[in-house]
Image (cartoon, rainbow, N blue to C red; front, top):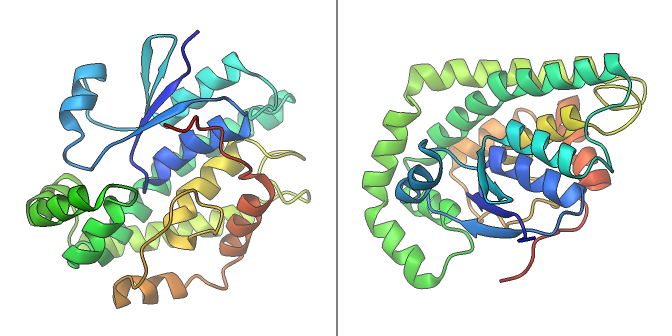
Length: 253
């Protein structure tokens, strides 16, 4: 059987959600990293849609991090990401969906609002792990890529302000939903914890994140991050990464 292949952006929280699930379950896999904007022909050809992550599993292309985790749970149930208790499982899946819709896109918009105006930093962030030649070429075309991203994500000052508020509300919910165990659904780490922590990664920047964030982000982005440094969800995300991010199961190229 061929190893699963994950088509991904390195610096993306939804892609991190899928990567983390593969690593947590110890599923050996290959990764194929793409550049935002230039990924479209590759992904459209395989799935008929434009988003990553996409997992190629047994010859079938599975887009969307939630569907990927569902497939991995069926492929390798242990260690589980879906709680065994029916009530805990319902809660975990409901929280996964809520964070996917209410945290992921709003944190992304707020982050990109703070960095896209800095072409050097933004292009460097999105081309982490690429060759020097590729990074220079991507920097050269990034003004066009950045304009397309701004349009695609509906980024402007007003929408970013709304998304900053929605991000703050989502962090409040993480803090409120924590159980006595410290987890969001029952007594064990689950898909709810993985989703919330992975989607917070661009804000929290945990040291266990598998790719290095470039130094010297724009000052506005730093200030926004610092407003949450004492939030309980910030420390909770760091703790989930410390406890559960574990060792990569990627097969080296």
